[in-house]
Length: 137
Ligand code: ATP
Ligand code: MG
Image (cartoon, rainbow, N blue to C red; front, side):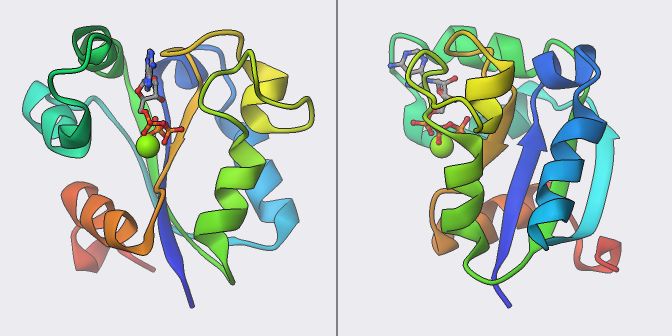
């Protein structure tokens, strides 16, 4: 079964959206196999978003991601990487279709509520950045 890493970002946690977002993935038929509320370090956020280092928005992104607790999760399901990205909607909430998570809950880039892995390689890498094997149920 495919696994992915999903993370409710500090804006989503602050706004009380954890429950609503989890409910969408549960309703879709996916299964959460690990989850925790945590404040992420600069070091961890740099590893997580290493592909974006040097981009003009990078400083803003890392400051935002460490600005409060996130809810980090591992989910399992058929084709979950592609389908969870569909459910999240476009990176830029201005382009995200209503009915998607970002389309329904967000209005601007860098306050886009949720992260989801974009490939099987990144899913494995991100899962192991945030979780140890013994944390999976
Ligand atoms: P995420 O990885 O957070 O799930 P994503 O995969 O949809 O988002 P990425 O291209 O991986 O999009 O970008 C990571 C994050 O960097 C985005 O969520 C956004 O906050 C920020 N970002 C990406 N591109 C831009 C941009 N052009 N301007 C401002 N911020 C950006
Ligand atoms: Mg991404």
